[in-house]
Length: 445
Image (tube, rainbow, N blue to C red; front, side, top):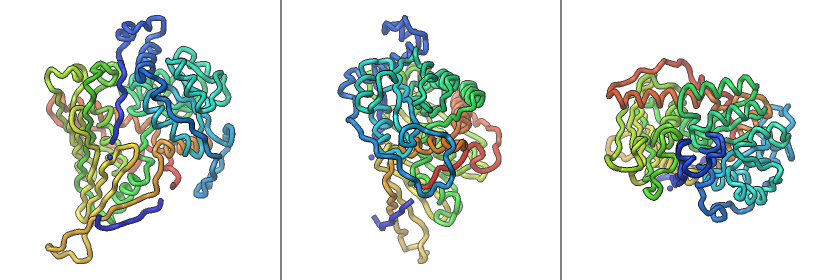
């Protein structure tokens, strides 16, 4: 990774404004001819973009497969055209159209070979832009027919949280590897079921924690663990907040049956997972409180805000804040005894800003510490995570963020909710070691 230091010296987190709902709400939308999961998926996928043509990305031409000079492992699995992993994108909402599919233009190892959507017109238009044949277009009922498509090696599931479990299981049964958006699911039981299904089918399961593949975050991780720059880590303060639109109070993110919760599993999860990633250890205790504005229709079923603290075996305390009803803020600061590192914005898709400050050679009290701006080579976070996934499929390596990583986050989130309900700290089962739930680290960019 290239780093430039200059001294001394914006998350546009898009929320899907969709009329998300439970199965009962899906019937209100006139989808009673489909199975329950298809009703919910179609409701979310079809109404995320009321005017599909305006939401469609520009046509993208994919560069040829690029050789990664840092990679020494062979690729025993025969991939598709130009050596790329063929992906079926499951769900054509804004995240897929505006971030994931455009990222394929910079991906070294992936290409889209199939689309799964509840909106056939949108699917055909997107397919034309990405050179996907109409024979490789599927809906949520015909999803299982992916097993007969040799151009599809894996699926990328981008659906409402509660639908992840069923589509991961179906993908594994169809013989496809799985990349699944976060949060992994809405319960510990569902997470474990997904892991078991993929293991039974001998297929890889990776959770799309894009932050863990981004070079600046990986630089902070190195500073935290090496100790030379920041010293002994004492505290980490994190926040990820957004002001959810009031125009569509019934979107699926406000429905507990589909989202699993409010601010915590959606945007608060970035704080939780990133803290675990930076430290490489697992928390042993959480304490939390949650808040919702009385009478706000957005937060009838899910929490508006969650504030929590995690205690780690090394003694580090991590303070986290997530909210669906404040002005946007996504940032963190790692505080050591000889320096600090600050990322602001931290969880955006692009435009991350990393700064650090540390004790200089002249340590007199009246000498102000310098602040250094850290610059790294620009990379697309989604392309990086997809390329790592493709590398793992090709080599058989365990992904850096496997299903076990998502399962652990779900365990911790359930403990956070328990603490918020009881008003008492909740102890977690200790897990010894560093990165014990993670797989092979990603190749250097």
